[in-house]
Amino acid sequence: MNKIANKYSEMYLSDRFVPEQYFIGDIEATGVFIDRFGTIRRRFNVYINGKKTDEGFSLEEFFVFDDGENETRNWRIKKLDKNTYSGKCDDVCGEAIGSLCESRLSWQYHFNLKMFNRKVKVKFEDVMVQQTPIIMLNNAKIKKFGFLLGEVFISFKKSEYSSSSTEQVYALS
Image 1: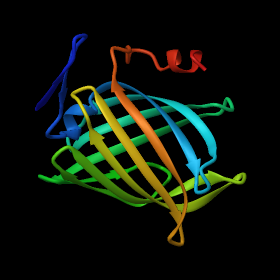
Image 2 (image 1 turned 90 degrees about the vertical axis):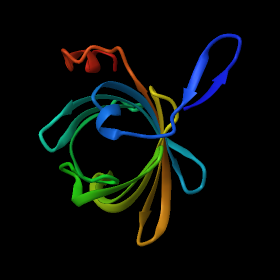
Image 3 (image 1 turned 45 degrees about the vertical axis):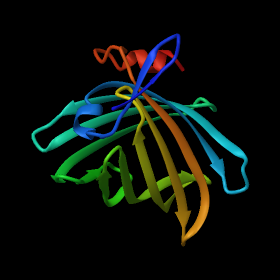
């Protein structure tokens, strides 16, 4: 790990990302969707609870959007080999495939995204970079027919938030 120190704290940059370790437990995230013209269209918070499974890990995601909408997504992630992962959730068409390289995990998948009061099949090109043992950054390009619709930017932080009750998540909205 690379060490960056200042007079207030010490921070270690991660050289390696191990998703099956990082995603276990509670994680809080905040993000924004910016359309292809640079307009902020949606902001959100995500509360994630990750659990180890026999084949990899699962993620329960609870989204709270700036317009008051709530959404839940449940991912099932498998480790296929040293550097490859597959993931499934209800709105993923087929499966997501992830490729790991040092501190970066790149995902490619088609997703049924809620747009214009219906679901539209789009392509996600996701890049996750573990910055420190507790911070991960994510950028996802969303495309339709090869054309960029917009990008999602998310910052994840491993949390001390209790996983004992998901009702707490909705109490925050």
